Length: 177
Image 1: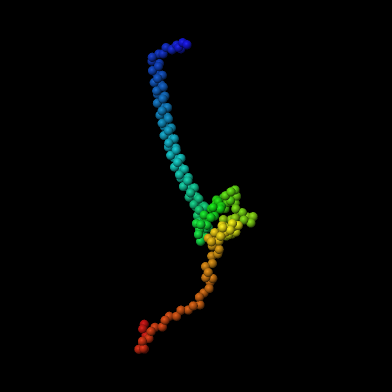
Image 2 (image 1 turned 90 degrees about the vertical axis):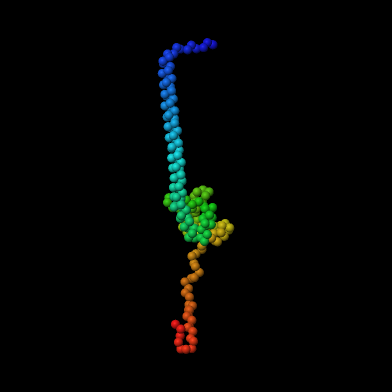
């Protein structure tokens, strides 16, 4: 095999081409550095926005779900945290169409009782839990759910009267005042 003949190169033309290539490489290197800086900036902004979104989701959940669920548990239970734990272990609670809804965790469908969707009210939740077929759960719910708000006083008024003790007399006809 014979080597390919090398075409004669003009000395001035090669220098110009080399200078053009160096200039192009410098421009591309600058553009690459600018793009890398922009990518870093965008990644930083994306992570900051992700943190804000997570905070907003947490706040929304606290306002729309956690607060009302805690209020309901406090209104019907002597141990609201235990009731909430038991409720969340058995059901999922979500906001659907602006209404708190109890869902079956297996199929994400609303919990039904007597052919109707269980409303997220104190009486409905109380009836659902106290009507449990599982004896262990029913025993737990009976222990922590307030059956009624009766205080035991029953509105009975006391007929007891109190008398003030008489002041001692010392026989001189004068009483102490």
